[in-house]
Image (cartoon, rainbow, N blue to C red):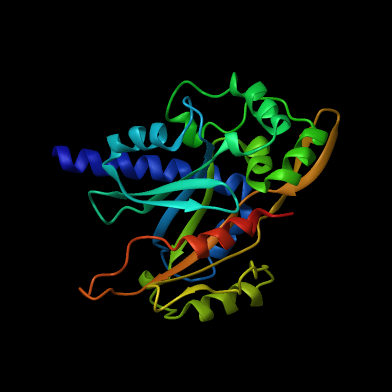
Length: 265
């Protein structure tokens, strides 16, 4: 086996692990992927983190470079106080990766103290910044306090380091050509779409249309009690060609801003 074949296998094994991890707390994604009646191609995988030295997006990106990923775009979300980058693989057959981080210094002392208190539990192994999950105890009152300031922070507090969503590439589907058709089969099978900013975010003029389900609700243990909280969602994307005839590979910040709300309560 040649070196390039070994690298492809290494990347695919890692991506398969991410998917298997993701569907344990997003069971709807596995069910939806089977609705299309064909093999689904993944457009991108997204992750969330904090802008702290031990876990920021650049530390994640550095680890992903070993799989052939490189940074190809950056984004800023004014209202949610996030910054993000997207990575593309040297082999375009592999999905893009979207990494975002919370700008912790832009929030209250209370929020920063909670994050600081759990930061000693953040993984040392960089792979676990993408697949390590949560290894700290959680308290419901702290979850609610975080949620009032930042849904993004409260989600990270519960779920830790794991895939936030996978994305169906509508361009690669043979049985569906339009995102609206995909949305219809999702709704007709009882799944709820994120309607913030409209069911379809973006446009042909922006070279990207996106939609997503609302996150699954999963029971989580808070000390001696349990509560249902949003976990993760499944996204759908259709890309359009730019002037050079090649499909747009970036992201539209104002659309992504609304997609983030798929994990709202």
